[in-house]
Length: 126
Image 1 (cartoon, rainbow, N blue to C red):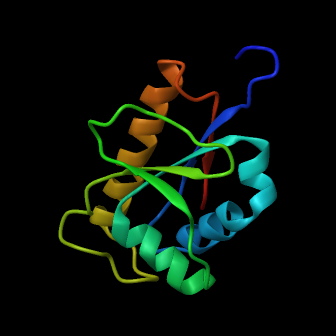
Image 2: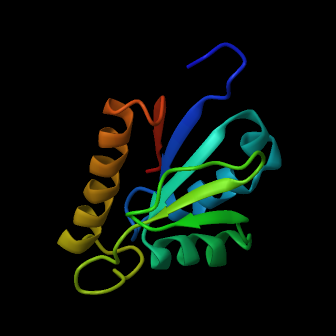
């Protein structure tokens, strides 16, 4: 990271069936957080939508597909869209293999980006 540049942080919403999506959206909805760092949200659309619904907050995101070049805009969250969990959206409060796989897929993506130097840190919601 160059002097004067902003840190790039990947934000993962954790278990799609748990409290992570709500907590992550609340974290991302705080303007001071987007002002302090370049934030990269990595999650399937249904998980983000669930977090927004429960948190009663709508995120202003720059939406990118898996093949798009990573880019950031000051004060805005970059959203790297992931595939939906196998078997559909897991029910809230229920452990499932699909929910676990979705969380691990987001973590694997973020870890690769960190190894490649595209992000300097990872925040993983519960």
